[in-house]
Length: 345
Image (tube, rainbow, N blue to C red; front, side):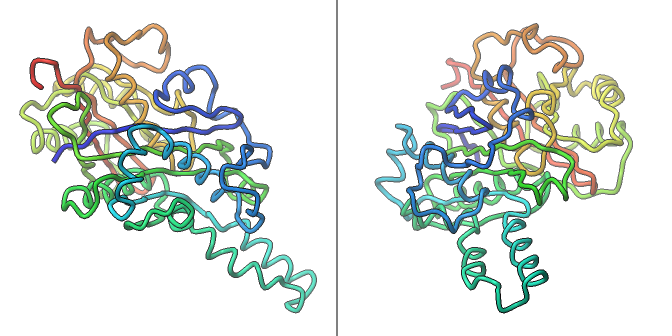
């Protein structure tokens, strides 16, 4: 089955944008912004939010903006029980847990606030946003590291495929409190949400469900052969106009992967996602999905404006794109995106 993106919403630092996301990635430097502790500056979620942590506020305000877009609003207002919410977030309650533990350690268990326990329950991001928005379809919050974004898309497309839902809000959030900075080196703060539905004949942009493999570390040549094999299972042709690397481990050498992909005629062009939006925790696959959609929606890609974010040739046209992620544990995922020609619709 094929799927399409209705609208997208992105927040990073002081930047807040709806579709398309690419100009923000090029101009505003997602990885360089911090929120300064104010994760819902517009009070979108209301004023009585002291019990909500930064991740819940950040995603909630981002997804709330998405719900106000024309295409998404037309679905969720009519049938709130036919909308699913699938969010990826790491250590979403880390700040609550630290406060609870430090209070007990420094002041003793009698001084721990009883509100900190329900706070943790309220800060399950997907469920809280569903409650706020009045969406009564399925929801879940996924913690799966860098692959969390792909997994959120996989679960969402399953619900769309069996027609238990008509639209999915698929998103992710990364925050960087003082506690997160102790646990992680990266300081990217970003929240992203996409409205996804089953594709119709009139949709020009489509994508297929992600395909995932689990392996131990493999050479770049082995990875290239795996990608070619997976493409052969899903597509008539085994070649792509470009491959967008959503995220990668330190041991993977992109130049070697590019050479291997060229040799077996998969692609001659690599787009380096982390040079658009920096390295982070769980949002990279979702940022890459939005980036891929923006590139495919352009009539003519300005390759020179992308600069060092492109490795290899600049194709004359961009119609079929592979979004690929490789994590440190050896899990590899590929998602295929296509732009239909006007003649095929």
